[in-house]
Length: 352
Ligand code: 5CU
View 1 (tube, protein in one colour):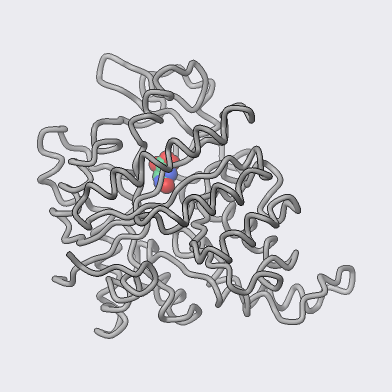
View 2 (tube, rainbow, N blue to C red):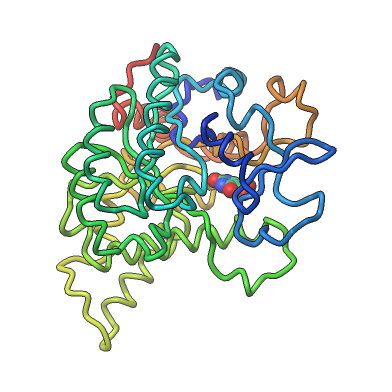
């Protein structure tokens, strides 16, 4: 496909954050091993002392030059870059607000220097929710920032945490996106000894699905209809399960959430990336969601191909290609909308 792409799900670990991970002795951290540095971030990896713990991490995770090289290789005109999981969740509450502000300023500076190629989603100190509305207001004043990324777990109490109300209000008032992304997974006890595969395929997607469903059931989108939620990984499982959620809520005589509309109504207000990896899942998403609210994503630099570092930037990455390939099952109009037109409109992008 030769459409210019806008990538709305693409990560970086900013240099300040990488330095922090290198100093740490507990997960999340970067460990130096004989075969190269390893990024160890997932909760279950804490006790893994093997040489295969985590995943290889090179400059593709934190160098702007490498992000731009990946974009050039894959026909991506503009990327909306977000910090990757687990963001600053592990930072002491007293230190987190200042670090969030520094990382947000760092990302703004990186984007400002990119000649229109990069925009950003910042981070929030969710462990200090009372500080977040002010940071959102500050971010809204940064010309290259378009919102924030937050973890599906919030500060460990889910996204229906009552203390998050000012966050939703400030994001809606500022016209900022809130990009909801998993990290902790769910159900790991059910799939031991499965590497990262089950965790990323099912643990991540159900984590997101549960968090967003709860946020909706507790009325966040009813109270904040202008809130722009971007849900990672094609909405987890939600586009596929929305009808079941509606039916279960309607038919449950043991609990009334008091919502005037079914959960699917609010799910249709949300934005989704197209990271579904194959046509049938993308078809479920496009059949369900607002066609103007689905946008291309790559999840770069995760799912790095197994090639030597010196040829990586010249290599076509299979995972983004699978997502591009999935688009080809859609009509030309849908492809154009997802590949770039929806991203241009949502993030007020003028192509360089
Ligand atoms: O491979 C992984 O661990 C990940 C991750 O941690 N976060 C993500 O967005 N994709 C893949």
